[in-house]
Image (cartoon, rainbow, N blue to C red; front, side, top):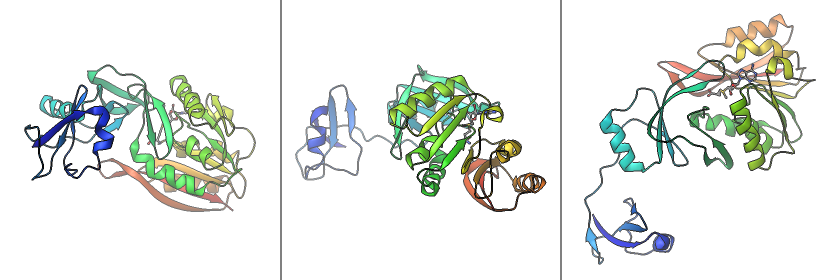
Length: 289
Ligand SMILES: C[S@+](CC[C@H](N)C(=O)[O-])C[C@H]1O[C@@H](n2cnc3c(N)ncnc32)[C@H](O)[C@@H]1O
């Protein structure tokens, strides 16, 4: 690949130059950027073409990469590090227990807090300590489109603010309950960072004991959420909407609990993301009528 060697600082100015081959990636080392040059333009030298990374999928969070599923081979890991130049690579084989704590092994570097933006929201977390799924992005955006300003909302499983921040950004007043003190500390940080302190009341504890009064909308972003539905219904009335997450087919469990509690309802199912094998992570929207 033909390149021109320029300082990294002048990279933004160079982006619109006619000689830049924008179909290839710029390679950076230290203070310098090696910018691919189009055919027919002067160049400073040639470097070997880098083969695009083609190993297992990953999430980038700040300068840290997170892989799920099977651990990468040594060659795949080396290729990923060469391609992305992260400061840390973490493999989370699975998430454990009710707190959904990552079962993480560090493959490269030292885990640390990372800050990144997703759909206009800033998140800080340490991916080796708490979970974050980019697969929930569509559901967060859907939630944002549903929430109306001033709604009283309970988030029973707030985590680091996965759904709380989206609901608050849309104008809801969110009571955000989280049982894990590590996640809770990030939740508080993320509320501040997004200037949402006026709209979110965070509370550390078990949602089965912490909900208070009646809500217009109840967020139940946990795979075992159908088992918590009775608690949620104690804080609901006709007009309340519940978003009950689960893995596999939990619709019958949900409707049985609703009918047992004497509610009439409309229920609709939305797929969030593939979970494992043929299983889906879904959310059932329940409108109480
Ligand atoms: C955010 S994670 C699940 C996220 C998302 N549904 C996913 O896996 O794609 C669920 C959160 O609920 C919290 N949690 C579990 N049981 C709880 C309880 N009884 N009360 C409050 N929070 C709880 C966990 O600590 C965890 O942070």
